[in-house]
View: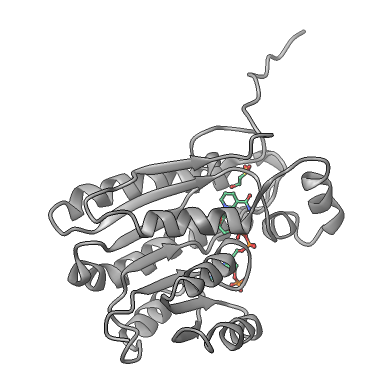
Length: 254
Ligand code: NDP
Ligand code: 8X3
């Protein structure tokens, strides 16, 4: 246990976070896993804890006090975090800005921006203490770089993730802690089900007839970033499926 590296993964109840938990467990890492759905955390812990040490905590990343409490009370053996995977996040409201409820914008800001900041702030002292070889892997998105209709606050929140990652790197210069903005394109998870508020047909239609990224594809990239030689930092890694590329500009005509 002494030399077992520990990964702290938010949003481990589904999609990328869950796949990353499995991937890191396969490689022998100890895990601190969080998310709001307790039953899923328990199931994942039951699955993985026979192989590696696992600590789970039901956590809403929007609750700054709860984040501080959880991080301050990590049990012995789970304190020396080596990789923070800031993955918890969501998109809501695929319709244009003018048709979106303000509460949906607030939820994305509170989760994707404030939640990520809450967790990062709580774990920075730990990561700096780990020093050389520690990583913060922030899950951004292609939406943080490329505009498209219906992306509004979601894409803007991921642009925050990108710039925050770069700025953190400046402040962490000399500590050995790496920071990466991992920016995936379309990937089949529960993401679109959440974005459409439970419209399974819309989710199925989005992924139908193409080959999106899988959660396992992204888990592999997360692990790759976390295990690079200590002197290397990938600043931003944008990954799309081959069958996704950019759209053209829209021109309004008479
Ligand atoms: P999923 O919906 O499958 O997983 C999202 C995870 O985030 C869940 O585990 C969920 O857990 C957690 N989460 C959401 N809100 C909160 C919260 N307030 N507090 C704690 N945990 C929360 O989607 P993905 O795996 O696809 O998404 C993971 C990340 O990847 C997100 O940041 C997303 O924006 C990003 N992304 C996704 C892409 C895609 O196409 N799928 C592409 C690019 C980026 P619970 O509900 O149990 O709290
Ligand atoms: C979401 C990626 O391709 O749906 O982060 O815009 S995409």
